[in-house]
Length: 273
Image 1 (spheres, rainbow, N blue to C red):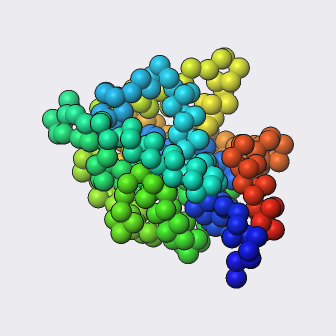
Image 2 (cartoon, one colour):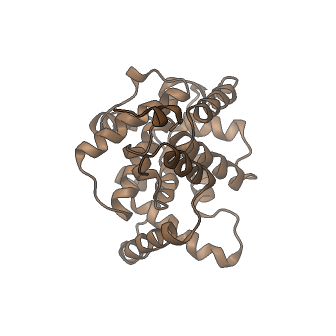
Image 3 (cartoon, rainbow, N blue to C red):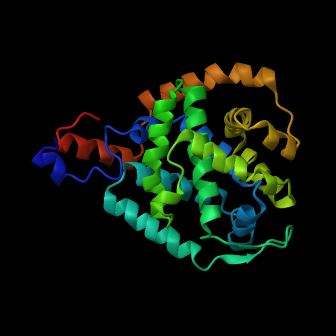
């Protein structure tokens, strides 16, 4: 039963008892975000929309920060904050349309298929990174997470009945897009941007490690399309180091402002975070 105090506090789309809050409070999910960008770029229509209608190469960190802020705010923010971001994304997507120069196919940023491609690959990538660098998850937990994230998908205009609500359904949708995936020049440029963003020299080794961890989560068909060679020795050595680093970061670094705000609202509602 929800108390009157708890009901008066806006705990957002998910709330402190959700699987989404459990997963997204972990810094290690950053690696999942990088992995998702790599997978998403292999869809020629998705990457054409980005390449033709943004300046991501010259605004790498701005775009990265906006994407991270969107994920964290829609997970931990209030309902109104999440809905406001959803309205903003829909407004940005609405005028974005064109023709992919590689396939000759038309695209629109608000095409439900492209929106589902972004959504499902993010969901998959976050789960895989949590399992690799935090702890394993049971099928029931993964199903629960997929079902919860339908709420996030609705923000960008998707109908809930169209969004995969289980781990298996999420995987089936991704697999269904494999025939259109291909290595394009734009995809290779996007991959290089993810792996080699503009950074001062002292920060590049750390980002290289994160990039190698993200590559380790890629499916084999993505590795083959990109022509990447896995570095199994580096992957084995980095996995425990990155996992330990993520735990240390969670303990020592201040949480993002939106997470701190969620903690305050949860305390006000008398609920354990």
